[in-house]
Image 1 (cartoon, chains in turn orange, purple):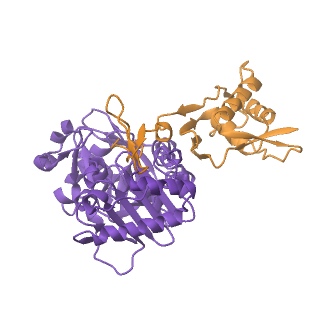
Image 2 (image 1 turned 135 degrees about the horizontal axis):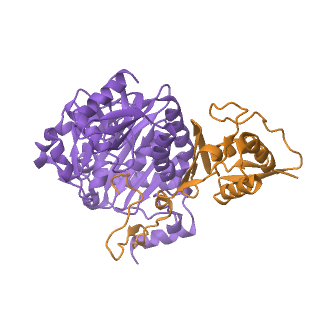
Length: 164
Length: 359
């Protein structure tokens, strides 16, 4: 059994510009940034590679300097799964991933770059738009009305930003 | 039992379809129009799309139209969307009870069970306002219980949900960004709250640059990247106003928002300064430095996308993928710069004009 991964569409959308990946999860209201090794792992996942193939690719390009690449890559993939950014795509036969070498930003392919652990930068400041449920009452005709909190304030998630 | 309670009970027994509910609401609109002293119509054009607002009475007109005045066009026979606007208090016409359950209301105000087959439904629980439109019939309804409950921020950015939903299907994405430029090309000003985006825009009021938006505008990527103005309002912190002498002389005409900011209508204070839109030539990310001079350096498109995309995409998840795709296209194709904003405000429009000449 081969375990590959795919982006968790349609809840998740991503874009890579100049080597940096921006990912947005519409279901959880979180968004993410990936750079350097993290963005390359994302690219390799998108090509349909298994964790083992990704480790091999990273190992061929980076000087790991004693770091356990298998553990590091698998831990990073687990964090992507935990954030619901990717899901496992289990297949009885491995499809053929694109094995083109990963980009190393202009360095000669023979030069190994120093390895830095992949980081998933997470932003949660927009979550209140989805989850800050206004405390409200329902009037006699069935229409909800806002019930003020004890401090008299509520963030209005239906407002245009900047006004809020 | 309250009469509407009786209706509510029957609604619970036999669920009204979204289309039937919209039809019943349309009859209430006719009642409101009959009971109003006058019908007031306003016509607006947004990137070739003609929209008619048809008010039952005068109560809502001063609260919902000033921010759109720069988009006004003469009356037209055919429109792309006609919106009927009414309130129960001034017209004396009560509202039908909602046919959905309370727990179907999303935090952002959308009601997914009533967003289907061309129908869009949004309820603002904060000021009791319903927006509903039928894409097929090209008709919309905006109802609020009491016109006096329209808050200042709604006057500054009226019918936000309606414009977002209707225009996003036409390739126009609502973004939290400012925009200044010339008829043949302009700049989108992108930044978080406090980045200096609004003050960068305000500094251009005393230059040859036109204004397309203070902190809200529409953008699109087809056939080429563009900016479309939507609201003529601008806001600034009271402590910042003395930095802009050309604005400070209008101090008595500015009003305070609930959040303490000063609100004003640009096309009233600076006639001719608003522009309805322009091709998008550069994306600028301002950053306040505290230094005297304004300088420009290359900006990171990914950082710009990270700043701009989550707000609109997450706020409106139903159109999130399309929004994200459109904004990604803009950041991939339009040059992106960081503007290090200095204290000598005369340098700011000069730097932007230079970028527009040589993007």
